[in-house]
Image 1 (cartoon, rainbow, N blue to C red):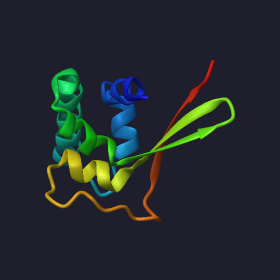
Image 2 (image 1 turned 90 degrees about the vertical axis):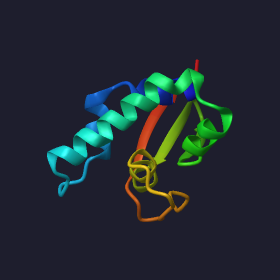
Image 3 (image 1 turned 135 degrees about the horizontal axis):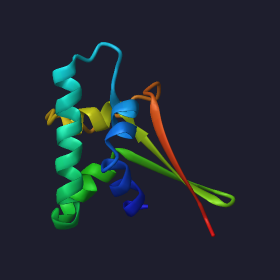
Length: 103
């Protein structure tokens, strides 16, 4: 699943679509993309604590025949924008789902 998350971080169009809000200006959207791109490039060399911090924003569910990552949009935006308190999760938060079928 970490590889799936890494691949998603490398897909600028999917990231922009998933993480942007209607009120975002171009500069904010570019900042989100740049932060995600930098995280993706550094993924293999990140200390385990930084990987855990990033993955904490992810809820993994395992169903029959698939695994789904449900990412907290609010938490990921905060993490990528380097907001200090990014440990919150709001139940009404828009979840970003990425599924992978099991073989």
